[in-house]
Each structure stands twice: as C-alpha cells, then as structure tokens.
Image 1 (cartoon, rainbow, N blue to C red):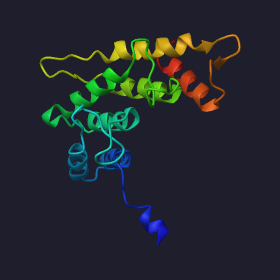
Image 2 (tube, rainbow, N blue to C red; image 1 turned 60 degrees about the vertical axis):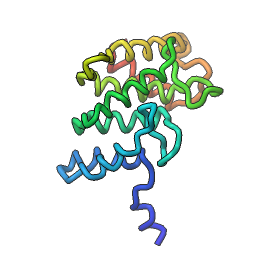
Image 3 (cartoon, rainbow, N blue to C red; image 1 turned 90 degrees about the vertical axis):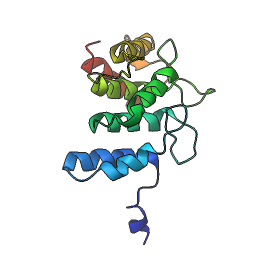
Length: 174
C-alpha cells in the first residue's frame, strides 16, 4: 500500500533523521549510520540521494547526526563540517545554488545546528574548525539583513524566515 511505501527511508536526509530518532530511543542506529556514512562524497558533503552532488541542507543533517551519535570514523564528521564551513561565503551567506538568493532558512539551520555542534572538538590534528566564529559570521549576515524598525528580513516575506531568525538571535543573545 501507499502508506507502507512511506515507511521506507529513501534518501540520505531521511536516514540522518532516522538515525537521530533511533539514537534517542536507545535503539540500534549504528548499521544505518554506517550505511549513511558510505554515501559521503569526495568533497566531504552528502547529496540527497546516492550519487547526487553534495548539498548544504543534507550535509547539515548528516553532520548533526554524526555529532550527536559521536561518530568519528575516518574523520567523516570533520570532512562534513569542512564541506559546510567551505560552503559559507565570507559575508556569512549560504545559498541553495550558485544562482539563488541567500537562503535565510539554510543560514538559520546552520546557526542552530552549529550551536549544537559547537562543543565538539572538530580537529584531525591539521584542521581546527572554530564553530563559534562560523556562527558569528552567519549571525552577522542575518543581523545586517534584518530591518529592526519594521521587524522584517530584507528580501523575505516568509514568516518562517522571520521566526527562525528571531530564534537564532535569541539563543545567541544577539
């Protein structure tokens, strides 16, 4: 039936979320996490599906999952975080594609997830990623695009963008 088809995990983002659920429930999550780890691309990121190019959103979900499950096999978490960090532009903006507008959704998700990952020692002996400096860069971009007088994000009429940004500011005391 159609309902049963929806029970099957089909993409890497769904796998990452299911691993976190299994981990939280104290169930055996390791086989699914190991399977997910094999989907890592050469650039360190993860695509939505097997053999898809890496994307920021999926890679963010996988990084959080690896961080929560303390999965550090073959420096995969570091490689994923490196991919994410390298995807953030110097001004703190993040894009779905090269030709798209900056995504407030992705920027806020990155602030939220990096905040959760900030205590991790993301260091392979050569690279030390300062998660707080990346959070500050993302927040700076949001702050520079927030019209305080009108309480809105420039270029966005999406209430979700506004709520996510307000939450990002609150948890980071901006």
